[in-house]
Image 1: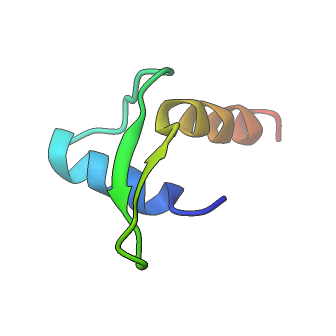
Image 2 (image 1 turned 90 degrees about the vertical axis):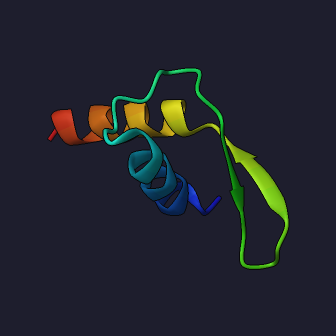
Length: 54
């Protein structure tokens, strides 16, 4: 995996928040110039769940 931070940054710059719907898929262009689709909503939700369990 990888690119989730870039996807979150891109989403935040466009939307102005990180309240990402659970099923949201963000398209990013990686360093290799390949377009990728990342399940950003699920990733954000998982990160929040992990922090809450601490």
